[in-house]
Each structure stands twice: as C-alpha cells, then as structure tokens.
Length: 244
Image 1 (cartoon, rainbow, N blue to C red):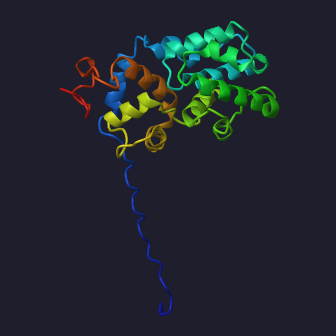
Image 2 (image 1 turned 45 degrees about the vertical axis):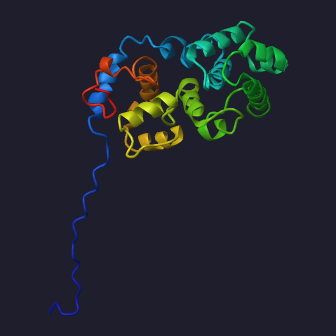
Image 3 (image 1 turned 90 degrees about the vertical axis):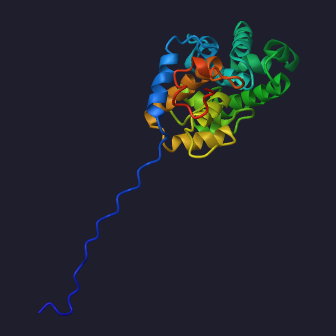
C-alpha cells in the first residue's frame, strides 16, 4: 500500500526572463566603429592616454594619468594636453607638485576649466598620495573617488589606463548624451552615474573598455551636443534621435 507516503511533485523551473537589451545596438555599435576607424578625433590625438610620459617609472606614469584626468574635467582635450605638456616640462612628479606654490601651479594649468579649484584639489590629492600611498595612486575605485577632485568617471578611467584593469564603464557627458539618444538605457537617465549603472546592466563586459573611447570621439566629431551631424551619421536610419 502507498497510503501515507507523500510523492514529490517535480516542477519545471521557469525559464529566466530574457535580459533587456536595446534594439539594433550591435548594428549601431559596428557603424560607430566604422565612423571612428580613422582615429582622428581630439580624444585620439590629445586625450588622457596621450598626456602622460610613457617612459616614466610606473608610479610616476600613474600619477600623471590621474593628474591629467583631474585637469580634463569640463575642459577640451586640446587645453588639457597643453597644460599637461607644460607641467611635464617642469618634471611632473608628486614631489615637484608639492614643492610648487599655488600661484605657479595655477599659471601653468590655466586656462583649464575651474582651474582655481583644480589647484586646490591637485595639491590636496597629491599630499594624500604622498602620505598614504607612498607617492603612488590607489588601485581601487573606492579609494580613488575619496580623493579630492576625483569622480567616478575619472576613477574608472584611471583603473583602465593606469592599472590596466576594467572596473566599470567611464561615462562622461558624451557617453551620457549618446547612449540616451540611441536609447541604450531602459529609460532616460539624468546623470552620468545613472547612465553607467544602466549600461553595465546589459552591455557585455568585454566592451566596457572600448565604449568610452569610441563614443567620446563620436561625440566630438558627429553626435555633437548641439546640431548633431545626423546626415553624416551611418546610423541615421536606425537612431531614435536622428533628425531626418
């Protein structure tokens, strides 16, 4: 007799919901790669990856990467590059910055955006690097964003360029603007940090390193903040924001 015995009922596990991803994104990405093939945007020639002394000792190189990122905030690549060149001509190290007075530092980095604030942040951050990190820069995003004048975008780029580590997507105004125009976010985002979280939710991780460089140059040349050059864009027929 089977009376009193309970029989287990096997339930089929529900299939996971398909992960959301934007319509046509792979085709859009390939077309942006095609438009960026010449690598002739300001970011390619004068971006942060071109601003540091690649022959410097690793610790000095990493410091120069961080400094160039701090200078680049709300500043055109051409202006950042020129400021970094002037700093490097004086021997750009943690000790040289600590020994430099604020007036001289301000004169060298001018006319980068918010240069007075950046003098203060550079001095404060450099002192912390000397005291806490032996003159090097931190190797985690969490520690980097605690430094005066260093935001999430800078931290992720510093991890990528200085430490060769992909910690997240670096979202600046270009990446924020373009991904919203392409509807690469489920719903419109207001701030770059919101955009980063939204992108990292679906964009394959092996594309995280490339996406900043790709979209920044695209935003400098084609998908401009005002009057985007939609007629020149290969994505005109599949871009939700295209002015046809």
